[in-house]
Amino acid sequence: MSPEAYLEMAETELEHWWFRGRREVLSSILRGLALTPRSRVLEVGSGTGGNLDLLAQFGNVSGLEMDASALAMSIERSHGRFDIRRGYCPDDIPFRDAFDLICFLDCLEHISDDVGTLRHMHALLAPGGSIVVTVPAYQWLWSAHDEFLHHRRRYDRASLTRCAQAAGYRVERVTYFNTLLFPLAVAARLCDRLLRRGRSSGDAVPAEPLNAALYGIFKSEASWLAHHGLPFGVSLLAVLKADS
Image (tube, rainbow, N blue to C red):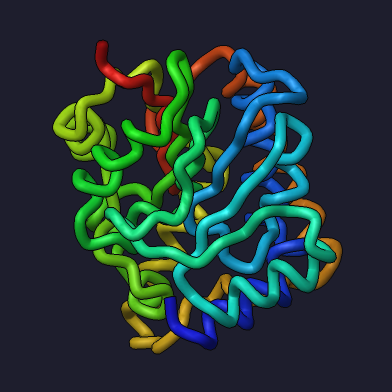
């Protein structure tokens, strides 16, 4: 991502409704996996560290981040509680451990070789371990937001499934999410295009009443997603297992 995007993330990811809502969804998914306090957890693309405390509820957490400034911010914010190392995907990864859970939380869309990166994770995944992936959905929703964040692509259910299978994984589940706010997101993206905005209109933290309302709507999907899927949405989530 651009340096400006990392700075913005550091400023907003603890309060912005989207980050908070995604953490609620992730928590509901991770509670359904066979994780223990001793599980080894790796977040690939840990950014400025906004997900590390959440992941720490499910095991011993490590992080991989390519950007030196983001890595420094995450270490400072977490007071050095996590093992966060600098590296690059697909194959410059400074870990040799067997992880029970590897997370790509809105990271895979930034990586040129997404299939090769997932394939490389086989060597780091413990027997029976899981990979959890979240990515932005629908290439037709491409906007200034994607440009600012240096995305390389958006996915749909079929393209994410093909990517995972080409890398040698079995797709345990794949679902869209952020569904209830999908019409609002489409309207915002179309408005950005029509007005030729250089930035997405939804990046900043909105006024508190609106921020709380959007968070509540997004959060309400979490309990449903723990056991069921959704047919469309702004984002996609997949749980992968290594093909035996």
